[in-house]
Length: 268
Image (cartoon, rainbow, N blue to C red; front, side, top):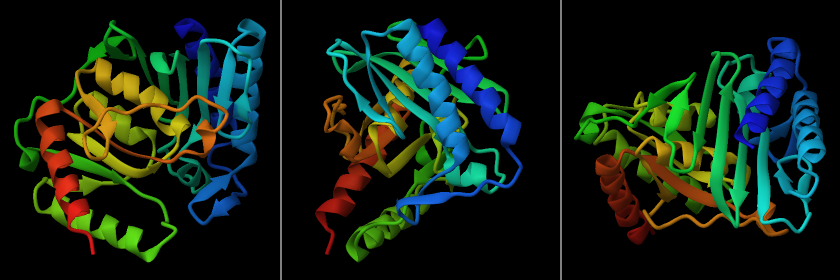
């Protein structure tokens, strides 16, 4: 299945690169931060059609298609263009995410960054690799030694926006600096050690299923924002669930999880 996922991600990546840099009309999908382009749809058709040809008995959750039930223990989770806003603006922080879950747990994952020429893959128990070479999370021991990613979208309430500001303020006082591509790039750079980790309080299952396995196989932790185990919902209701996630090297992850708990527990 991993080989098929790689082939489909690369084919989808080629379709994205054929139009990247041109005029991309981004249409809203419910709020100002959530947009879709024709490129998203074309990429998803390539992937979903390929899965259905090769694995017709497997279920699929895809960002644009939604839930395609097949009654299988295997579910493919697809984000055909993660970082759509970046893509539409001509910024190369975008890519393709494909994960295969068995009984709700990721067993294979692909993260493809076509504009950068990078392909990250992982299988459960086999480590994470970028372009064929093993990658691991940073070995830095202190938060002040690392850059940290913070991904965020427009929030539905003022209180949620204010919580983001408080968390950002606290993180800025502890890490070397904050980076925010708000895309799969944050997880990729966490897995290969260029970032210490990433905190994102606005994700869906297709944003996190593949990065979760890749970061874990690179030796990192991938949990909810407070440091608790993350359970992915692959039921018909799964596409509607929102997740707040925290990923990073274990020794740094614990400190940021404690920070999140402290800030959330004292929110006004």
